[in-house]
Length: 238
Image (cartoon, rainbow, N blue to C red; front, side, top):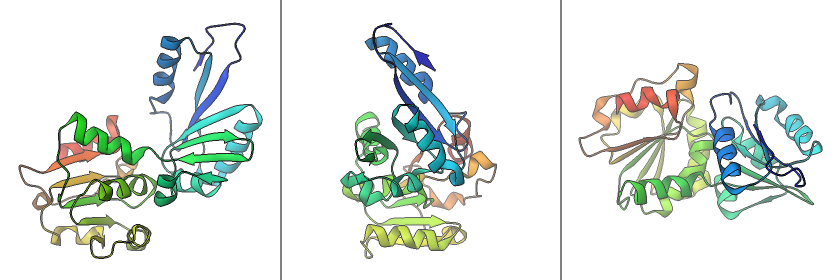
């Protein structure tokens, strides 16, 4: 979506990359922001499969792209091609924000700080010592896991269909006494949790796993990192 509020101002070019990405509200949100502040802005959604992401990003840069948001499933790949990472992006090994610099792409990750702010400020949750279940071990999970630990949660259980990915994320976090990777198939043996975070994209592929009700109590808080239709299966379960 392109907004040009001043013929004398250069149009700033930004985008959101994902696969799929048609569901993203980012173009509409940024267009509204640009209108409100009188900024000449073009913000588009670019669907790029992981194997084509590097080429698509290079083409975007060659056409004057200044920055981008990154969504599933490209967050870890985007981090790997950055010439500089913020501290939180480095800890996560994933980025959701790219800024073009003279030396290449600089990456940041605001997923974690955004989630913590939403849970604590908007919903008034005290996260300290909450026994937490994180479903998924991809880029979205990597973005929020360090922030959850920094916010003072109790034990963090990471479950994933592929146990090796859960192990890899746990190794990255580096707190073996507090972080526990598990196979998703074993989730029914883990007891109940104070906080459950769904960081998978399975619902977009109509593959959301069946979760036992024993995971939750009436006081459990549940949050899905997706929005819209993709969040319905998990939130309906919760």
